[in-house]
Length: 162
Image (cartoon, rainbow, N blue to C red; front, top):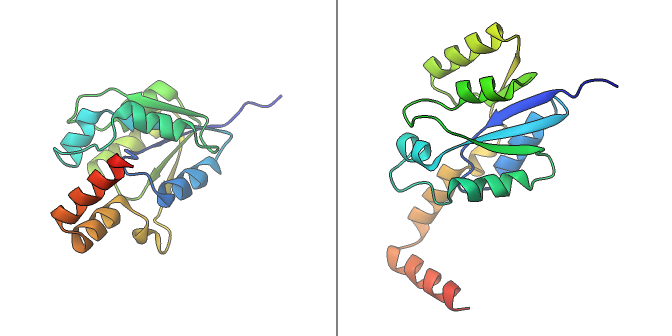
């Protein structure tokens, strides 16, 4: 019996949308067993915005873990100032590390060096055409442009009373 090829992929997955499913399915194409690493809430706040995440780490992990293309989802504990990727790679020891092209160059160079050192194949996925319309930033932008704070509060109250 041949050994399963383990893939590692990471992301915040705070406002889950179809672009996330798309990229996870693409990552799974590189092996047999997909492990998805998620950052802690503290890391998301540090990296993105003090008001984030919307969903706590365990809630985000639960959503990801229940996707058909995902075999395992883990929360990687790291100090907020550090990327979780290096710790995740050392922890999971994948055969293939898949990441998107949207990355800080210093982080990318460190990931490339670690993958070489550990003999891990690294794949960088570019954004698919049209995927900008399936992004968390695009969702936030749409809401800000189309709804006043009063309209949002009214919708929330109505939703909570149903």
